[in-house]
Amino acid sequence: METDTKPFKKHIGRKVLQMRELLGFTQEAVAEKLGISQQAVSKIEQSEKIDASMLDRVAKALGVTAESIKNLEEGATVYNIVQNNYDSSTNEGAFQQGQGVGVHNHQCTFNPLDKYIEAVDKIEKLYEKLLKSEQEKVALLKGQLGKL
Image (cartoon, rainbow, N blue to C red; front, side, top):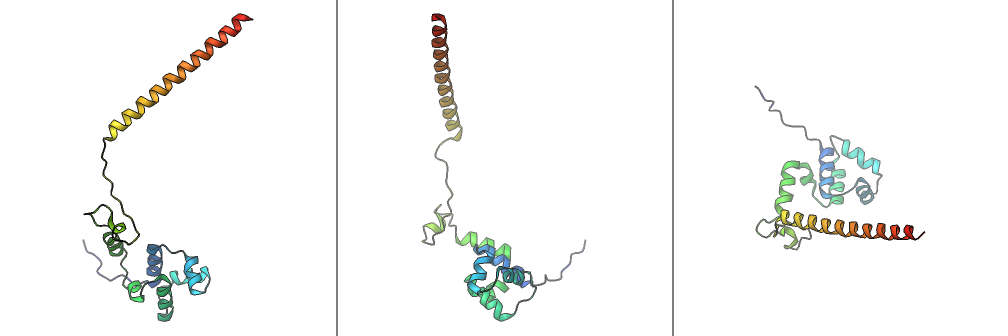
């Protein structure tokens, strides 16, 4: 089986789109920062090649460098974001590091099955109370009907 070893074409617009989405920006927000329309941002993201000055403006609007957009490898970027925002030794990750992004890995300190059984017991007790209440109502109504 032969594999194609041709390098992927660098579609800069797609990289702009990926970077924008990774950073959580909308097209509208980028358009506002650039002073252009949302449709113009969409056109940039669809373009295989982007003028260097426009790429610099877009990068500045996203708060990154043009080189970071050009060299974006989505898989590696996502991996780096996860690794930079999560420190497995603290369970709190970036939140404790003062970065404002909390990645929490909570460990259960109870047996979930025990909690489920407790919930079922509570439901059973509530059902019994409801049934008793309904039986009392029926008895009262029968008493009222007997007086008529």
